Length: 358
Image (cartoon, rainbow, N blue to C red; front, top):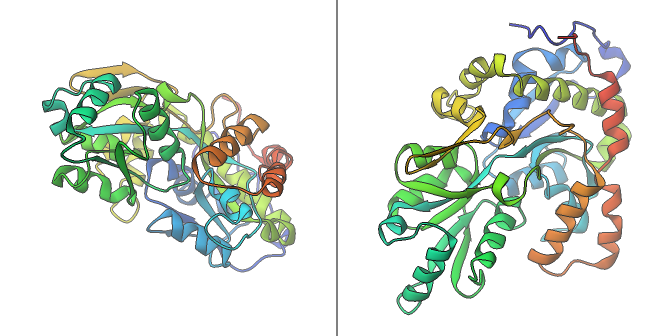
């Protein structure tokens, strides 16, 4: 089915100096929806692109495959283009993004065992951490050391007076392993993107004291990451890819397509999660668990409020947290941050997006 909001205007494939296939990686999360929607609704084809989606196992794999040219582009943590360009944990490879794919969508989830111990919020967590310190440290997981999830968890713990380095243990796990480890008791909580927070809550193995809207409203979450060299050598292909994804992001924010998109991305080869739960993730409400459901229309945004624009404020949000949380970063590298988020490329892609007036 072709979405009625998108026009049938086509760009001829002959305008691109490109390979036969554009390899586009993603992680099985709800915020990968624009990539799947663009593929299923034929939006890539309308731009003259032949895109092959590739589901990857984790963010380190996404980074490596982009850096070594095994993927042309990828759904990536907003920090990854900076981490690659700065040479954080690996040789530096200049990467950029001209498109924010999503904002928000993360939640901190704590175990039912903590609730039974009397933890209701960050203040009571602080009390329990102090009381249990002599016996063991609580263990909390995030998906990547340099990620918004890690920033959110650390900032929330610090607000509670809990030292993330000394008072608790922080570990890294793939998103798909969060719920099983929480259920097994090998971790006491986690911060991850959807659907894993909502899945833990629906299975009654966890509850959420706070989500990313509560902590950092409108923060950039996922971006389209490419090597700078790819953008320079294949500029038309890159702009067409972004343009198709902008159109897909608009569809993902349209409630009339919510049920269809939820069903589409729920497939076990994509996210492997019940469509009903995904639809809940995309809804304007957030279920914190324990009977607390609140209106949260900005919990996960794909298009509304100029969400796709990679702004200077976004860049500052990311770089300041990388410097604070992810070790020493060379001053010269930080100076290059302005070349990573490319608002000029976004403007070009936006100008080529085709929308039928509502």
